[in-house]
Length: 391
Ligand SMILES: Cc1cc2nc3c(=O)[nH]c(=O)nc-3n(C[C@H](O)[C@H](O)[C@H](O)COP(=O)(O)OP(=O)(O)OC[C@H]3O[C@@H](n4cnc5c(N)ncnc54)[C@H](O)[C@@H]3O)c2cc1C
Ligand code: SF4
Ligand code: SF4
Ligand code: SF4
Image (cartoon, rainbow, N blue to C red):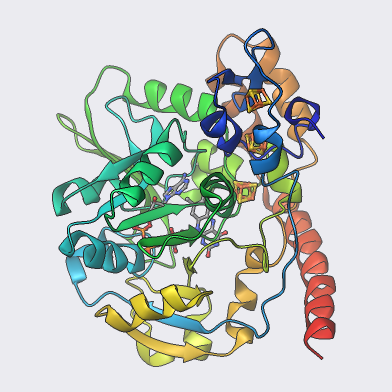
């Protein structure tokens, strides 16, 4: 199959094809929803087929590991780092090891306009910008090429991203590197960059923003808030449920079409270590629960095991059932059935903000209940298949 023949529901936007093209003739072009898809300049294309070969959606496979990988609940002992991290600060603990060895970190950060893209960090100050979840699709740009060039120079590299980006990188590299650590982020789905960019511009309204935090722990980790700090006039803080951008994300209305049928769930994880929130920690590691954040990590490879052993993370090994609270480790999120209506409306409007306000500033408990029901039905079915596989 050719990359341009992929349906939008199959292309995850990982940008592996654009990075590999020897002719540089693939551009990622935004559609009306604000998601980017590859477009080939056929005059320059030499039909080498490399783009199809590296596409993780065309080549997705389910390779079950011989055993269920180890699952741990972890907490970073550095309280300041944990406070600024989305869950337990695991990402920073692994990054610290790489930086101390003169290595380089690649992950999702904010640019000067608060747009989200993949970038590098070479010291602890730069790492700050990569810390924390950003609920919007991150632009990869030429990052896979930069990762490869750093690896080839012999430097240690940590690449972090959602699982489809880890798959895109692995396919782009085409071989294993001992000096690479891949850290995947458990993923609900990614909202449209167009919506985020319109939203943050509207929210700023001329005031300079000094910090954006999708996972503020001001009222406790279990009671997540979205928080924006302004340089000159305090801050904006809202619970997830009362912010319309966050509602669009959590209801899976504004996510990329491929996220509703994501091909990068267990066992197709493509990373050494996968990080998520340790939801339900009270049940399986109550002694570690302090409502300041804890991560759950899945250690998929020996490289991952070596790094876990070297970190200062406080940890406890937990059974598979501890991860059942992270349904999205196993199955895709259930797309909101109003998704198409939302984007149709958006296409007609000059102001994305108006469409977002119209759709999301209302009671959503019914939609949320329905989505949760679909997800839990998918989960039960999937768990049955996995159990059968390991029997
Ligand atoms: C879009 C999205 C959806 C998520 N959905 C879930 C979920 O359903 N269930 C769950 O358990 N956990 C989910 N997480 C992950 C979780 O919230 C924490 O980020 C994770 O547990 C790591 O936390 P930490 O404290 O170790 O480090 P943190 O410092 O909080 O982690 C930051 C890391 O996340 C990466 N990152 C941040 N934003 C993005 C982005 N937009 N695209 C790619 N990489 C990004 C950074 O590169 C960095 O490596 C999601 C994260 C994102 C970004
Ligand atoms: S076939 Fe080769 S040259 Fe053509 S777009 Fe794909 S990678 Fe580029
Ligand atoms: S490589 Fe990634 S961006 Fe390119 S077509 Fe495949 S899924 Fe889409
Ligand atoms: S849900 Fe799947 S396809 Fe969507 S961003 Fe996450 S890993 Fe990629």
